[in-house]
Amino acid sequence: MSEPLVSEPPSKSDPEVAVPPLRRRLALRRLARNPIGVAGFVVLALAVLAALLAPLLAPYPAAQVHFDAQFQIPGTVGYVLGTDDLGRDILSRILFGLQASLQVGVLAVAVALAVGVPLGLAAGYFRALDALISRFTDLMLAFPFLVLAVGLAAVRGASLGNAALAIGISQIPGMIRVVRSETLRLKNLDFVAASVVDGASDVWVLGRHILPNAISAVIVQATVAIPVAIIGEAILSFLGLGIQPPDPSLGTMLSDAQQYATRAPWAAVAPGLAIMLVALAFNLFGDALRDALDPRSSR
Amino acid sequence: MRTYLLNRLWQSALTLLLASIVVFLGVRALPGDPALAFAGEERDPESLAAIRARFGFDQPLLVQFWKFLTAALSGDLGDSTRTGIPVTSMIGSALPVTIQLSVFALLVAVLVGGATGVLAAVRRGRPAEWFANAVALIGLSVPNFWLGLIAIIYLAVGFGWFPASGFVPFTVDPVANLHHLVLPALVLGSGLAAVVMRQTRSAMLESLGADYIRTARAKGLSPRAVVGSHALRNSLVVVVTIVGLQLGALISGAVVTERIFALPGFGKMTVDAVFQRDYPVIQGVVLVTASAYVLINFLVDLAYSLIDPRIRVTGAAS
Image (cartoon, rainbow over all chains, first blue to last red; front, side):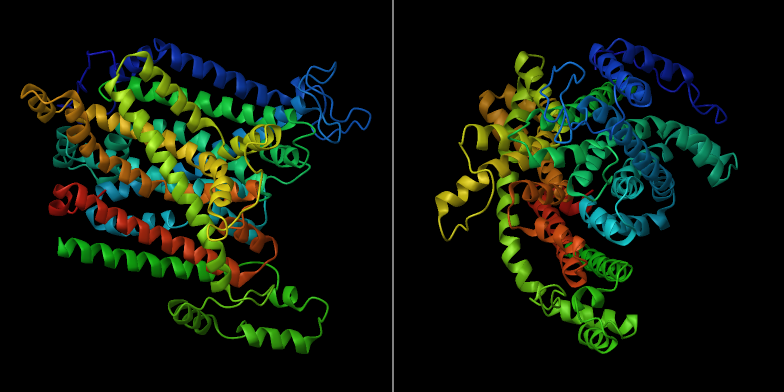
């Protein structure tokens, strides 16, 4: 964005050198100088830490009911964020819910990566496969993630794993598209052609030259896909198609809170803010990452 | 142009056929015997067999699929195993609600997102851009069903400005109809507005930096004419693309929004059908959604070639 100095891959003449490390170092330096990106990263790190350490940080087990302390308002001694209709501590439930959210986010993106990257590489590299994979993408796009999740929940039952699977499947087309267009671009560059002339096999060219150079775009796509998955999990659990009670999830907390929203609005506010904060941190970090990796793009 | 259209048409038809196979097989994979669900109290073998025969569950898969496909093409999606009402008429009464909601949400998204996107691009580096960017990022990060929940708590129940739930058909009372849809449309449109804003902004920045814009400025056109008729027109392709790409998100969002505001639309019908194991309804709903998706994307491609004649020549719409 602000950095006019761009180093081209220095090693075009030598087909054996795959990733120029200089470019990546420069990108990291640019990222570290972007205050918004750093802020996103810090919030993200804190959220991940809080989720991982939930068993230590949470004042109570997530499902522990306190019938003597129902509907405590936020700020009550012992219940910083208040309690719900069963007297369960909202802070504790958010911490454990965050754990589930991040789990779904990472699992979903892992599914999208595992299927999307190979298919994207194949579609971009082998002309014959492009049309076939495009039809496959069209087909997947015809089933919105919620419809997919509805079907999956009906066939295999509602659970964290199935929610992650449905969200992951819905993110495959986006991943294919990104990897495909990167592959198309890289395929025509001189150093790839040189490698082909040199007698390298398709697998070698894809794995050694194209994938390492496409990885930046893949990382950015993954970073923006995670918050979408986190919000997706909340939606599914809210509808009763995701994580099942009594397991804590930010989505089920909101669906419970809707029942007594006028009595205890705080129970509806806090989990939503938690989702928003984490998604925002991911999006900020993803934007900064994109700017750092490709300083010429203006988003 | 003609071969391009025919090509797209054939691709869409193929996608639709594949989608119908997926739907058909997916529904067969559902656990739980629908005959049992329908029989209720009378679970003796004869009545179960009669139910299976009536809905065709006892025939070979291929026969069932052929019957399903030919019936679907003639507008017959079977009867609900729950209520016995034809699925087509259930969809017929639920779909208008969802379409109205989605169209309003789209309007919100395009008007708000488009305007702020143009603003952010024109006022690059000024507070207006920062503000627009921040709002868009928050819009992307807020789960919109939560926004709906908060809107109900504070705007509907708290201040009483809007009805908290329910629906009045437009033909019965247009004013009440619109009043009921304001909050749902804003909620559903907000996330999409953020996407439209970001894409419009980057498309506008790109066109504003192009040579023909410099030419237009140099020949003395007013800034308004340059932005309005030159840059904006070329950024319109992006907005249309987004609408096509985000359609799935819009449909998914409509399901949740309807659930929160208790709108008797398509989404509520879908979720209810899953919980009630109502095979024909699930099948019909998913099929209609997939068809709508394919059809609208075909129309989006048509719109492309109207807006940008270059696409007609190359045929590369993606």
